[in-house]
Amino acid sequence: MRSRLEKRFTFLYTGEAAAMVVFIFVSFLWHLSFPGLGLFYLFSFWVSFLLLLFLLMQGSYYWYSKRRRLKKEGTSITPDRVVQYLWRMKRWNVIWIWIAPLSFFIDVYIWYPSLPLGMAIALFIYIFSILEYINYFHLQLSYDNVSDIKYLAKTRRLKQACISKDFVRKRLNR
Image 1 (cartoon, one colour):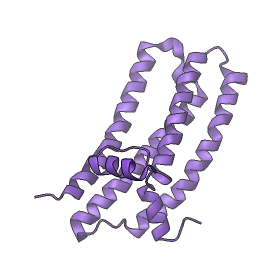
Image 2 (image 1 turned 90 degrees about the vertical axis):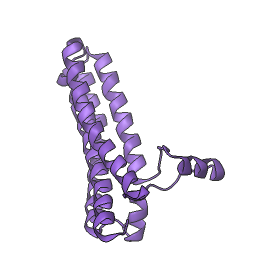
Image 3 (image 1 turned 60 degrees about the vertical axis):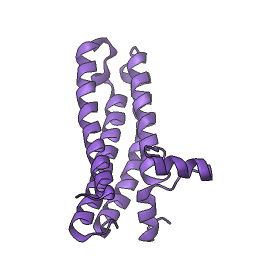
């Protein structure tokens, strides 16, 4: 019988991976259904969308590695190589987050100033990406189980993100 923690990790990594597939599929359908939005022509869409996919891939990898270690070694401590990898990726994420506003500037003032609805969708994706980044690397923003909700109600504070806890454990969060 699988442990509750193993099931939780499986739920989390498959959820992140499934979200990547669904977002790719939905973006393709939007492009086919609403070509006037010009999403696939917008630099800001691609920067924001790839940032989101990049973050979801990191989240899926993180939870998968925790599940794998739990299954093989009986511990849920994140492997050191994964923590080091995610520490490097955190820096790349910040670079992408800072590049995105430049992509909006390029779209608005140079390439496609006539696609405001498409840029609004790209902006929504960008904001969602920033929230995902915060959720993974700083503060837990999603509370989808009873114990998390009880913690939130009791303390009235957001929990530290699991990856952030791993950085502290490895003394990387300076």
